[in-house]
Length: 256
Length: 184
Length: 184
Image 1: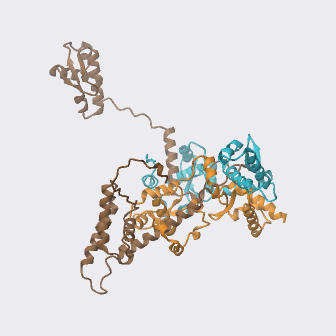
Image 2: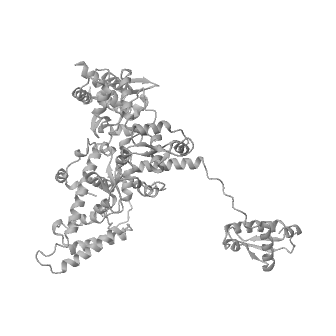
Image 3: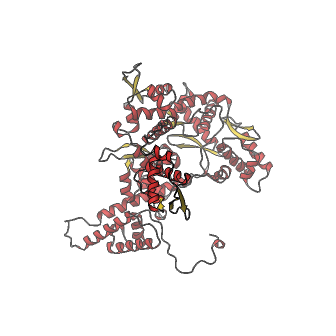
């Protein structure tokens, strides 16, 4: 790296550089290698401690320590405790055996992954040609061999979504369950009784949304009819209705 | 003159992936500083000459102020033959949609498929019948007694399904393929 | 031998238009009756040799069971410059591990992948599905009938493999497993 690119005033002091691990097995392999111990004869107590130490460091760095890591931490402790129990020759298998098997398998996976990475690297810049031709396929077609059930299910979803867009469901009109007139009378009585009526709390505590809407229209009507004033100290604050003293017009009362 | 040949190779690589005419100006930018216009013209000529040799199936064409690599007219028949061969192993988007409808809604009639797709799908259904992915499974006892279609055994084999109940549900597809997930 | 050269030109034209691997079977169909398999193989070799000459920017690859015309790695810089920075993103370590598991153990289920990696790999599998490197190949007949995955044709093309048997054998992987494998 060009040293000129480094920021001149970086905070001094040791910086913890923690490699990124792909999971508990990756971390364990790293520790086995770091401690220079044989994968076939892992000193469990030592590795267990190093494993927990790393998890602590990861937590301190605010790296997310996923549950997968904790499962292995518990397993390591279990193996460690089993190692302490006396074992009789040929009676039981080594408590570490399954762990070793998984590590060996995972190591193979990592090697194969590195192999694939190498193959891909050799092919950077290898792009398919696109020469001009007198005939081009009319439509993008899919190689049947490459079509799987997921492609099939997605195709169905596309059809159904398009169908729904072109045939939207008919608008459902709900029957009127509340009348504005009734609500005007009801609200007028409430406001007259209380002198300062908290409209918002009332609206927000109605069990039925339709009732709240009807009440809001009724409140606007009361103000329009100059039978109540509305006050609000600031945006989103409570709205108070106060009676003006004017009575409700006769036509409202007679229709209700 | 190895340098011209290196430039020629670079020019051919760019023309090969461009899929559209490439101007000399664009080639100058790609070649970077230190390459003269005349050198590039020479390189393009080198590519052109190489493809005038026996055994080449393509040629350098000068079109629309640029150059492009194109097939020769004498191979039109072969290309037609190839594209025809290829399309026999392919499914159009229309065919895939129709297959999906038959798979998930079977038994189903052509009018029902047409209704869902809002397009006449008779030709597509015929293609699927020819490919043996779909088959006729009798008639529906409604006006006009239309044929009803089902997916075939080959369909199950192709998609690796034991039976139709193994088709993934919409929820499953969402989980597996991240359909509808908003994150990139 | 002009006939081979004529066939070679025809083969090159087809490869130029296909942009994807073309099988020898497809070429046989295109060439029509009277053309022997051996003749076509010779013609493909003629195209391959012609592009190994100085001044060629493309090559004949044997991938995914067929032949394909593609650019050469040495022109990566020029192509990136011309196409804009559109070069394929590298696969993450998690993606490579998961792909390696699918490649060597296919057909395989997500729980099996999770077990081998000791990490939930659902999101990684989803990415690989989106990049079309793996695909669903049905279900496994065990409890929960999980979907099984396998590598796709695109996988073979991406890694330049003729078929799955061209994957390095576990023993080969073992041999080359040097320091490189352990680097995060």
